[in-house]
Image (cartoon, rainbow, N blue to C red; front, side):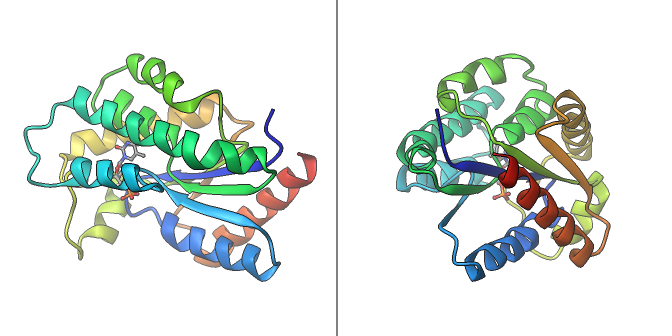
Length: 207
Ligand code: TMP
């Protein structure tokens, strides 16, 4: 049904997503392409308000189920208000995190299991990414990179949680190898960005 192209970036906190998204953005924009860049949770006024609630360190009493539902709510709003119309209009949409983050962090990290995909089927409205770039890293690499800035509520979770998230991402990549392209986050910024560019170019050519 959609004519556009939908790319998502995934990975542990500190895996270098933002750097790579910025490089891809510059490259596409210098080609004069009509591309929308979004982040999750966020991307609409309502979803950004939900983001503040989720990441607020003061909300230490938030239950795991509440957290999972809030991510799904922010996603539902973003899909219906921005992503679906953009794809219908034939645009390219790039999103920093999407459904795989909920599977890795809530289904595996918080150990909520299958209910996460079930709930998110309402949020997705049948839309899945055409290509997902997964920056593969272990929990330690991310930890070193985010050490110097203030951590949000999710980043403050214990190492055991981060190990489960990491394992979750491994399983996501194995389960959907056609969509999910795993790239070693320890490689150089240049190597990673050229690999991403090759994938984006070849996949959009096929679409
Ligand atoms: P960010 O720091 O990449 O903007 O993401 C915000 C945090 O939210 C990050 O620690 C990952 C987490 N997250 C989830 O736990 N589940 C989700 O569904 C999404 C989108 C993000």
